Length: 196
Image (cartoon, rainbow, N blue to C red):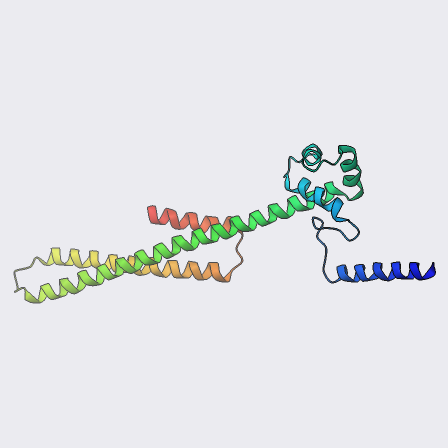
């Protein structure tokens, strides 16, 4: 008899050692929980925040009273609350990641727009410089020439500013741990600047 007890204690110690290697999450099968108890719990847990035991009973064929006893014994309500909180946390992370990706996308578009604007400005400036060389004094109205040159210079300056802003904001997002609300404000500001 003593040998059986020692064997049982040794088996329990091995089980405990197995679970000590990592933390068991509340929604995972618990140390002394049998699979027959865990399977209906999983079904119950995955029903979502409006979960009830009746659908679990109907799906598994396990009497409702027995499910209520197991639910109490294995703390189903506490465990599903932890599951719901974890799902909410994961959803928030996904939403934050999407916001960051949206901001990156806007920054990349702004960066590309800056590149195109700058290339156009350089092409215009080059063509303007070449054209001016072919004119004779008096063939060109200097007021119009200066106006066009100012426009081309402004376009080049804005293009560089767009590109620099996009690179700086992207670097800021990469290197910082901004709150999601702050990142959203950054994206909103960029969008307003693009539309304004």
